[in-house]
Length: 45
Image 1 (cartoon, rainbow, N blue to C red):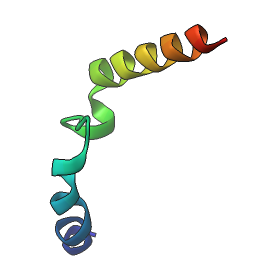
Image 2 (image 1 turned 120 degrees about the vertical axis):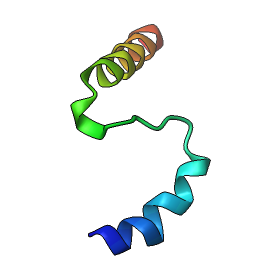
Image 3 (image 1 turned 90 degrees about the vertical axis):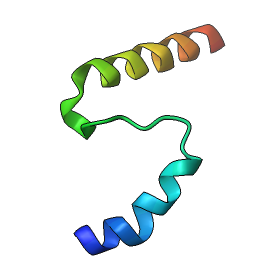
């Protein structure tokens, strides 16, 4: 998995709007994003 990460993921991170450090274990960041997305979706209704 690591060679594919370095080949495909790492080079494209610079194009990302958001990078969550520590991935799925960063509950605070995930909760913030979840709240923002839910807010945007509720405004669209």
